[in-house]
Amino acid sequence: MELVRPDGRVALRWRGAAPFTGNEMTVAVPWSGRLGLSPAPSGIYRVRLRATVRGDAHEQIEQDWQIAVGAPLLPAMPAFSPLPRAFEPAAVAAPGALPYTVYLGNLHSQTNHSDGGADIAECKGAQSPLESPHGPIDAFAYARGRGLGILVASEHNHMYDGSEGSAPDADPAAAKALYRAGLESAAGFSRKHPDFLAVYGLEWGVISNGGHINIFNSDELLGWETNARGELMADTRTPKGDYAALYTLMRERGWVGQFNHPAHSGQFQVDGVPLAHTEDGGEAMALCEVMNSTAFSTNVSETETRRSNFEGACNRLLEAGYRLAFSTNQDNHCANWGASFTNRTGVLLPNGTALNRASFVEALKARRVFATMDKDSQLVLTANGRLMGERFTNRGPLALVANFASSTGRKAASVAIMEGVPGRKGTVTQTSDQAETTFTPSPGAHFYYAKVTQDDGNVLWSAPVWVMQED
View 1 (cartoon, rainbow, N blue to C red):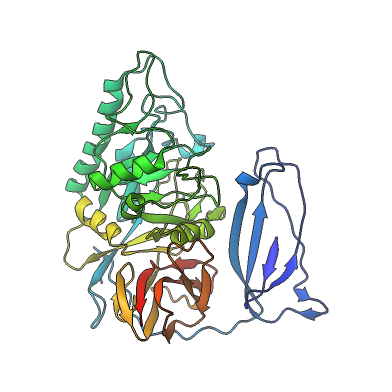
View 2: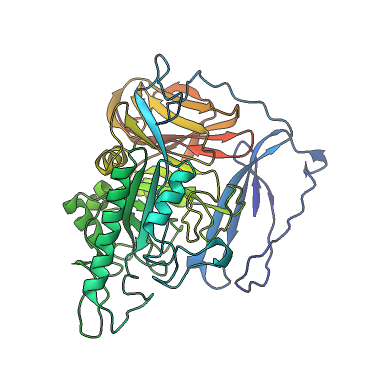
């Protein structure tokens, strides 16, 4: 583990090993708050942890979180009125505000159509497929009752036979009918409740030697498993682990996807290369989970403390060439959809646009999305007046503005404007610590995104902008 100074230099390192039995464990790392003989200077530091099972480097976990040391100076922030949230009493745009309405959602959860939906009192982890009491309608009603505007029930595509493997006696007609029933339940719930979008989709793939991808708008059940008679347990065959073929199919169908809890290595391989970019994938994949609360939380008070950061892996995908906005979700497997923590994915729809699956998908394709660990805060990046998610050609100076707002009075403790080069396969770096920064990029392709850490430690990520700088 490393303590990283505000200027990016490593200040301290700790190394150690501990026996792991598979259960939750805590490892205390002592630090006096000093660097050498003196107290550490005030500022926003980073704690970076790398952990692996001995002898299995491919499964390395990396976590990177900021901490405030001392009393760091708060950055200057531009005036920004929060965008209206739909169906709230004060949901009227402020004069001069951006012409968008924010819908807060949880874009990753499970019900009893796969391995979720267990009662809170009984939930100990992933459930046996199709056996828990609570299905999609329960999930949508619960999330709406907790104030969410969007919930995605993203069911594991290979569990519609009631098995984590291949059930020899499974009925393919029943599997396909269950998927259709999920689609119909989401559509019906949304029609009945126009203030809420219920989305039913797929979490495609497996974790080991694979990687999970959410597909938000497929009306087809995708799969590779067959029963003992060789019958496909899906509408459409998609070879297991063939991400290039999946991306091609997604682009052909107009489907939009999200990289779920990506690992730094070993996942989403194409021709043996992890986190590999393809032209089709670049068009189909729109989101990357940057932070999730734990998937098996039973918390219902939004106070879950167990969470994971995937920014490093998302940055590798951006550097590979993907055009991704950040999302943050809860991956609920217990019956607490959207209630385990305060994190939300913010989706921006043009003012006056009805909330439905088509407008939701259009927003994802435009990358009009931000990720926030605080449901009461917003972050919107603009570049020469253009909205985050856009790609454009630029000549001369580029003015980036990180627009942050909190409806509960939280302050920004730090700002980071991050920069990378699509297709370079290098390292994303911080280019500024100011919320408003103007400079002239070097010629060529770049992407930029903003990250704001609040005074309570919660973090927000804007979507990037993609800039082709010309002389």
